[in-house]
Image (cartoon, rainbow over all chains, first blue to last red; front, side, top):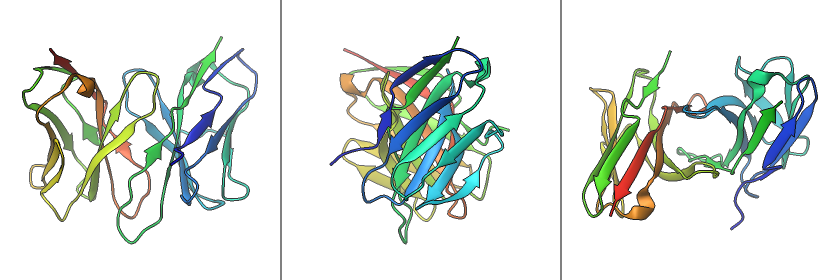
Length: 115
Length: 112
């Protein structure tokens, strides 16, 4: 059983550059989520997709952030004009749609460091 | 506004003993609660969940208890093993919203 896969695992970039992360969910999962985690805190919700439709965005997701899931499979999260405060672990999760609650399963994340 | 709180940043337990991790929430609309375990450099791993229609759910060494009137849940691990040393997060949502709201985490250390 292949879990949620995220690439790259680490990204170091200079302030002002654009970065893009990729997430491949568990194959039969039709919901995909992005979270951000900073040191000493729990993950915070950013956005989620059901198939290719982006159904909810957090107010944490500023205009510099954009997420896509073009064919309802993998997703990308892009951050434009990165800032120091964007340094964090970016986590992707996926789940099934079901008649009852379904747990979200997380990838190992992409750690972003802004110099 | 911290809707899910884990008030103990750390907990140390002897191997073989009970570990009890606690979590409080403020949003009465939450109806699904989960516990995740996280090792360094890895993502959170789903452990166990409970729906608000139940007050207990058990899976092997792990049991989650839910007290809706107190807005409190706890995770019991018995017997505790060295491999249980990790950061534990509780999370909650309501069926109308898909986002999980997480607590700040509790670092559990199991001592030999």
